[in-house]
Length: 293
Length: 318
Image (tube, rainbow over all chains, first blue to last red; front, side):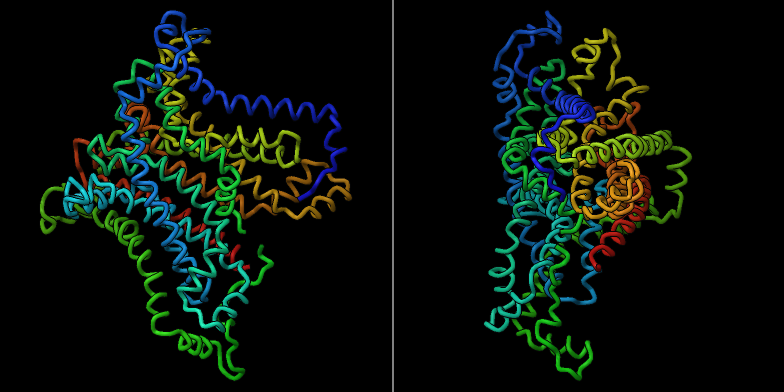
């Protein structure tokens, strides 16, 4: 990484000014749709209906209140939590197990294993839909787990499918990360008589904290944002996670863009909060997967 | 990080000098206790069963079903194999198929020809360690954290015929999402908006990994900045380029959420992914037929997944 000296950095030559100008214009253009959504959500429908959307005034928080109430966002956010939290924890746990074995032992099947997991993450979901849809409507669950008494239309089904799909990415990232750990650690652990489980849980996992944090951030946003599986494997409106519930609620909102934008902002808030708080992790997670190390 | 020693369990306990490598491996295996072996098996087997059961088996079943006339309701033993009939039906008597292929290709072209080079260009600019670079980066990849479904709603605020910003500013009355002549372009703009940030991020990470001495050598030789980029930096980024290529192909093949929230992939927004979904959860549940469409997707994606895996595995083996 080249480090410019402060003096060199501060010198503003005409090309530099041009460069900044260009980047500012592009950045503002990129932020604009989001800013416009926030702005629209803060204005009353009546005001914009009479004065047009390109006007100034009619500020109100009512859209948020109305959107929250009519769309039952409280319930839908809870649904998202029921699905996202267990799915992320399970994905990280299972993926780290596989990654550990791949990184710790060099067996011939390691490459095959890595391929099986990584490729699964890249398949188009729609290509699996038909058999999965049938499978989900055939597998019975006891009533206390799912009131549909099926894997279909239950939180369990969505958790499972998200875990199955996301495992691949995490295995790939974590196995690369674990391969970079010094192997002396395991020699020392073996001399101390540590079992494989201890080597995994007490030696490897604490060292993988940075990678796990990055992956957790990324997986929370991905599973929270997941739209397809919830749309096709859920039926009961009350059980939809918040991202796919938006589509069902659209009918009620359709004529009122101020409400649509308030709903959109509400749905976006959790991911935006995560993003701004854990930006470093988010970016690292994405790039850990793309380039090595 | 690749300069750190890789963990190799064979070497954890040095094998006796005289044994071959397989002998060493067998010896090491015997060093593991019975519990350890059970633990290792479980650690691999449980996740493997989940991924196989919920991803690979369904994928295989899709391919099998594409050769049958199953309607999804009748018992499995009444399934008849009809050979390639579903495929010929898809191509010959299914009007949305050709537009869907065209839209998928258009989508790929737009992401590949416009969004990807633009993302790369921005990454090159931001790699100069400018002041305020953090702000630019954040603004550009902010859309990446939003779901594509949500992006569909956010852009509706600009596209809506009566309440949208574009029509208000230009005093036009185009129904950007509803008009089947323009809506595919409208959703592609929204999709590109997100894709640019993602690609920029990937390239930025790649550029940070380029050995600075390469650039110094080029500038000592008096090469211009653009010449340095195309002749020196770009070739070094080869692995990233391949990953970006594959990500772009797969993203455009998997494109679904945006068109589904707009009009369930109808009326000008046909995509293969939406057609598959319509055939299963829609009124008509034509399983064999839908499976033939899904198999086409599967085959195309597997070609690119193989390229991807070959690239990253080669990278890792270094």
